[in-house]
Length: 441
Ligand SMILES: Cc1ncc(COP(=O)(O)O)c(C=O)c1O
Image 1 (cartoon, rainbow, N blue to C red):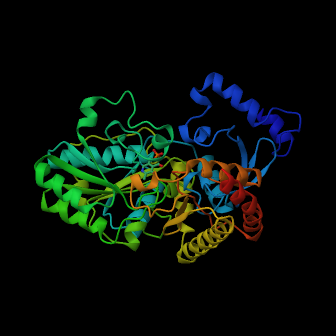
Image 2 (image 1 turned 180 degrees about the vertical axis):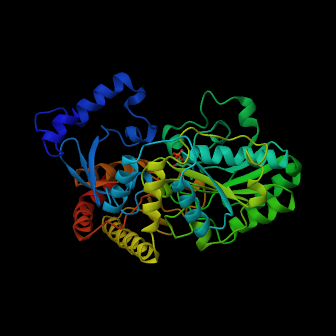
Image 3 (image 1 turned 30 degrees about the horizontal axis):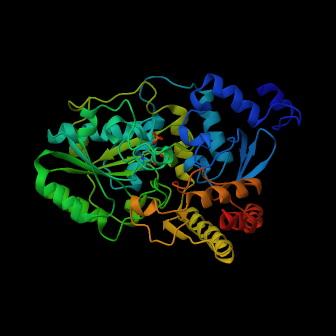
């Protein structure tokens, strides 16, 4: 299949199997036909597009259709697809060998880049955001000798057992409050509170504070659609946790290096003890990290007793991609991302307003999403007031018009600096019909 694809110059011949046939084949051998649930289009219906190539702002599917990409691999691709410097860095690293299972210079460079941009003093590299949050929580429990964790409804921190409670996007899409397979014991250590509700956090610490190891929060929530923290929310979390001898874990897997050079905490500093990163720092390859104050990180093996490890952690290809990507991410890049996000928000708002579709645009830096509702959204209950049927109609009309949006109403939209006039024109051209479809749904 790959050969025929290459022979066709990146396009399947018209009569060759495309997304439909690939999905049929995949469903027979991969559960649900996908390797991560939200990719399956269950929330919007229809057949997921199998992508074969990306270039700048564009994605190309197996049928040869071209889409302006507003998903960007769920956040990592701030420079768009196949940026020449990122590709060259990966090619050079690959030519030297793909993995050594030893320390490498690239890991030191990437760690230094992260430490240089953020409040963390030390960082441990891992392979996924899930691993980063899971390891940060183990470390918090190891440091405090306590077991309970506080998380917020609608915040997603990956699929580790104790964090799969009221976990937003993927889970919301499927309407599962939890996942079978997560034991009662694991779930009972997790306290779930409403996002943006300081009084609820104070109350739970007043009652149970001595047993709570950490509060984990998304720096700005992006997994129930985008819901920014209220002014002072993250700072209140730091104050309350520290007053009770607990740690604050700020999850920047989505926001880190996307919304600003230092992530959300660079825009809105809060005294986090541990911070998790992923997505952008891997430049589209699997890399993630957790870090914090040196005194906290010193508890981690081999310096300390809290165990954490990984065969491919700090992989040379991933470090090369991440480093190339971060080194391109200067102040001008973030200005461009902000401007592009604002332009697209304006186009979508105009089209929805003209068609009379109730909506709210929610932003956190250059991350944004549209809620099809009249209500202001401050938390997960607010996010669930949206008209999912209207989003579904809108999504499919945009897809037909060559714009790839996240296939769920509970996800952030992501821009890249590669979005150019041609991509903006394609988005603008698709919008009027999509807004009409949403109005009619
Ligand atoms: C805030 C946040 N934390 C953690 C994760 C998990 O990251 P990964 O999918 O790399 O395991 C995600 C993934 O979307 C995320 O958005």
